[in-house]
Length: 265
Length: 92
Image 1: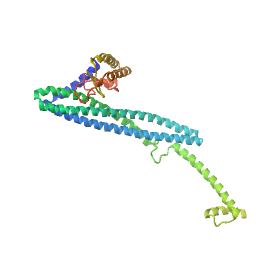
Image 2: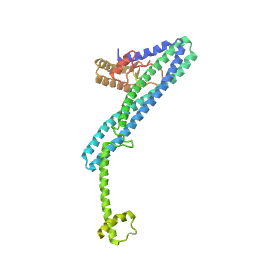
Image 3: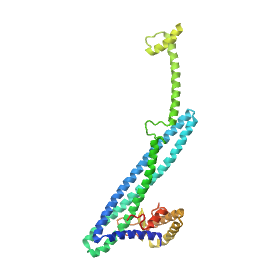
Image 4: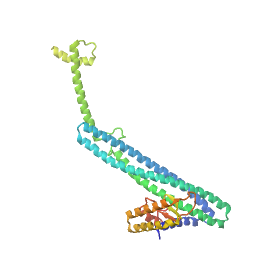
C-alpha cells in the first residue's frame, strides 16, 4: 500500500478511537472542542518557547561576533607591535569563533523556520476550531442523537486530522528547541568558563590582552621616561636663560635646581 | 482529491495528478525499505514539490478529511518509520 495512504489511515484510526470513547455522541463534540482549545493554547506556548530560544541564540551570536571583532583588533595591535606570534594566536581563536558563529546562525535559521511553521499551524487550527464550534452548535440544535452521529463523525474526522498534524508539529518543534537549548547551554558554559573569553565581561583579561597590555605598558613607560628626560632638560635651559625662579612651579623648580646647583659647584 | 503535507496543511489536487505522485511515492517506499536516506530525501522533496505545484490550498476553515497524507519536508527515514508505527509520532 502506498506510503501516503498508510499515513492517512493511521490518522483516521486515531480520530475514530477518540470518537468511540464517548457514549453520547454530543458529548464527543464538547469534549473534542475542549481538547482543540487546549491544543491551541499549547501551540501558542510553543510559539513563545521557540521565539525565546531563537532570541537566546541571537544574543549568543552577538556576543561571539563582538568577541571576534575584539580578536581582530588584537591581531592588528599585535602586528603593529611587531608580535606576529600574538597576532597568529588571536587570528586562530577568531577562526574558531567563526565556526561557532556559523553553526549558531544555522540554528537561528532553523528556529526561525520552526517559529514560522508553528505560527501558520496556529492560524490553520484556529480557523478549523472556529468552523468546528459553529458546526457543533448546528449539530446540537438541529439533529436528533441518531442523526447527529454521522454529522459528528464528519466534523470530528476533519478536525482530528488537523489536531494530529498540529500536535506533531509542536512535538517536532519542542524536540528541535530542546536540542538547541542543550547546545546553547554548552556555548553559555564555554563563555562563562572564559574559554571563548566573553567580550561582555568587565574584567576580561585573556592572555593575548595581557601580553598586549604588557607590551603597551612597557612602551608607555619608555615614552614617559623619554618625556621626563626631555622635560628635565628643558627647565634647565630656561633657568639658565632668565635665572628667574619665582614663576616656576615648586616641583619643577626643585628638579631644576639640582643640576643648577651641580653646575655652580 | 485532498492531500495533506504534514506541517503545511491541505492541498486540492486533480485526480489526474495522482499517477505522477504514485511513482514518487513508490520511490520513497523503496528508499525507506533500503534505508537509503539520500534517495528518500530526493524522492520526498520531489513528491512534495509536485503536490505544491499542481495543487491549490484547501480552505483553512473546512473540516474535510484528507485522502492522502504526506510526511513533513524535513522528515527523516526514522521519523517516517515512527509515523507508520501504530503508536508512533502522531499524538492521539
